[in-house]
Amino acid sequence: MGWRAKDIHSSADARRLARRRLPWMVFDYIDGAAGEGRGAIHGRAALDAIKLHTRILRDVSKRSLSVSLFGNNTKAPFGISPMGMCNLSHPGADLMLARIAARYEVPLGVSTVSSTPMERLIEEARGHAWFQLYFSGDGTGTFKLVDRARSAGFDTLVLTVDVAEVGRRPRELRHGFTMPFRIGPRQFVDFALHPAWSLSTLWHGRPQMANFQMPGYKFDRNESRAKADWTTLDKLRDVWPGKLVVKGVLSAPDAKRLSRAGVDAIQVSSHGARQLESAVAPIDALSTIRDAVGQDMPLFYDSGLRSGEDVVKAYASGANFTFLGRILQFAIAAAGEEGLQRLWQVITEETSITLAQIGECSLPGSGPGESGGTDARDAASRQSRQQ
Ligand SMILES: Cc1cc2nc3c(=O)[nH]c(=O)nc-3n(C[C@H](O)[C@H](O)[C@H](O)COP(=O)(O)O)c2cc1C
Image 1 (tube, rainbow, N blue to C red):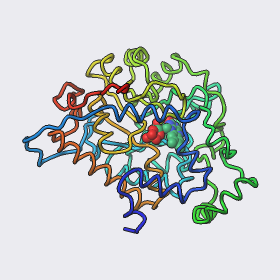
Image 2 (image 1 turned 90 degrees about the vertical axis):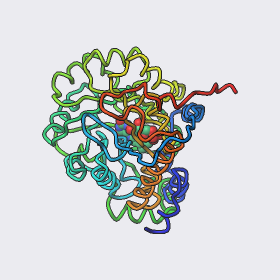
Image 3 (image 1 turned 135 degrees about the vertical axis):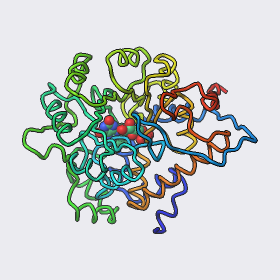
Image 4 (image 1 turned 30 degrees about the horizontal axis):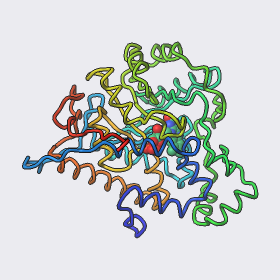
C-alpha cells in the first residue's frame, strides 16, 4: 500500500489529503453544502450529541458486521451513496466504488448523473448496484431511464425526492462550477496549481454525464425537478416491479404516507446537507421517523457519517442500513483505489471496535425482521445540545 493510503487513519485524514490534491473547484463541489454550511454543522452537532453507553463483561469476541438487506446478508454495514460525477475526484472513481461494492456485497448507488454508464457500473459491481433516479422536466426522459435501468438488470430503484430544485451551494458557485465543466481563466489557474489531478484528468478525458451520451436521453442539472408529486410516485410504483426506495425523507408524515404508498424502504437523508441549510438534523429525523413508521418498515440512513461510531449511532437511532458519501470520494482523491480500500478498512475497524465497547456482537436492527427494540438500540442517548 502506497504511503498516501497508509496516511489515512480517519475520514478527516482522507479529506485533508484530498483537499491538497484536488482543484479548489472540485473540492468545494464535493465538500460543499447548502448556503453557508450551517446545516452541515448542525447535522454534525446532532450526531455528536448522541452518546453511546459502554457495557462491560459481555463476551464480545465474536462480532459480525453483516447486515440483512432485502433478505441478503451484506459483508459490511454500509453501502455507497449515489453521487454524480464521481470521476471528478479521480479518473475511474466510479469503477473503484463498483469494485468495492462487489467485494463487500453492498449496494453501489448509481447516480442518474454518474460519470460511467449504468450498464458498465452494474457489471463491475457484479449486480450489487441500485439505480438512483432524479425526476426531471416533464418526466419523459425520467421514465425512459427507468426502462433502461430495468434492461440493464437493476432490481432496486432509488427515487431521490429532496431535489425539487438544486440547492444553492455558494462554495461551488464561486468557482463557476458547471456540468460538464468549462475551463475559463479562473479554472485554468486552479488546474495549473493542482497539476497531478489536472494531468491525470486531462489524460483520461473530461468526466461526462455518461447516462446521457445516448440518443434520447437528455439531462440538465439545473432543470427544475419541481413537477414530481405523489402521482409520480404512484406511477413509478406501477411500472417498477423491483424494490423501490425513496431517498431524501426527513418528515414523519411523509414517511407514513410513503409506507402506505407501497415503497419497500425509506432513506432518511438530507442529501449530505446540500439542499436546505435549515433542514432538521437528519439523525434526529431518523429516530422520529422510526417511532412514526414502527419497526417493520426498512429505514436506511445517510448524511454526515464520518466514522464507525457514527455508523453505530445511525443503527442505534433506527436504521437498518447506512450509506457513506463524500468521504469515499475524498479517500479516492487522496490515494486512488488504495485510498478507498484503506478508508473502508478504517471505518470497518472503527465500527467493530465500537460494538465491542458497547458490549454488542452485532449492529442493532441488523437481523431479518429485527428493526429495533434490541438492547443495543437502547445503547445510545441524546444529550441536550443546549448544554
Ligand atoms: C458530490 C456529490 C454528488 C451527489 N450526487 C447525488 C446524486 O446524483 N443523487 C443523489 O441522490 N444524491 C447525490 N448526493 C448525495 C448523496 O447520495 C448522499 O445523500 C450524501 O452525500 C450523504 O452525505 P455525506 O456525503 O455527508 O455522507 C451527492 C453528494 C455529493 C457529495
